[in-house]
Length: 450
Ligand code: TRP
Image (cartoon, rainbow, N blue to C red; front, side, top):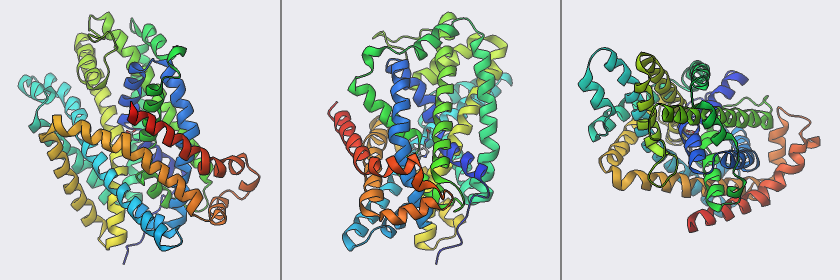
């Protein structure tokens, strides 16, 4: 029934694809703005703790289940369960994951469309098409729908080409380009007046904020979103990984790359904010807090680029190109979740499944774009703040309470024969069995109560 499964052709291919999924708007926009809102260095510190102590163990759970079952989340959780009840709960959890991945993509493609529009704006300015420039940068339903459609076409085209020829090939092209663009921008911004002040706000922790439950909940949410956890993205990427690869090492590399790029993005965005202040741009809102959220990316930074004169045009182009690329390598990994399910469980061809689901996502994006004030924040909160941590919790439970420990060990041993003597095996299983679910639950409840 199912078509032959794809596989990443190399270790590098997997690392770039999984890092490409992880590194996205969450890193380049979400992380710096979260840091700006939540006490700079204090947030950065707690974020790193969350990424390595909570997100990495959960990422490992997804990768191990994925590679063992060689299937999408719906079938995977059924395969590792014994007994009808566990199998049914597994199936429902998998479905929930597929639906949440689809919903995340529906709002993500709108935001990615804004990046695309802002990327084109410098080009229309240079060519003297002033009216088009205004249309591109002004918030409107039409613009939002058109650009999320263009973005979804790009995403679907990559996914329809398959694992090796689509996901891997494009991740290997786009990720290095993105890093290069980012490095150039950081170097440029660092030499501008005001950058050092931004660095201080970013890096010096205000220790009074470190225990703040709001900060901790934001850092956890950010870490789960950034590592693309809970919805089966990493599970499906793990399922395309060769049995010869060392899973704990692969997971660690992806976590390190993801956190490092988030950290680098902070080195770009926060100093840029203070450079903007030097140029006369307001960077604090009425309440006296640093401007964060959409205003930072779509008002403060563009104002900075305009104030730079001629050089501002290529800088804006590079910045929004960077954003678009980062978004694309992430959105393909979201689309792969429902597409792999449709291929494997309903016998569809990759081409049909990709375009069919691409259209479904586009329709959902359109609904959100047309009812923006009512739906956008609602969908973001429902998916990222509520569903992702809960799904992460379910995955930890399935891995360590439902699945056989021996089978899990055998899976990790393939590619890592000495695993039993490793620190990983001494800590990880017990940790994912008891600590992760408890921590996720405590912080989830705290976040909801807030
Ligand atoms: N991690 C990506 C980012 O930081 C977004 C992402 C990709 C994602 N796949 C996901 C988020 C699955 C949640 C679930 O932008």
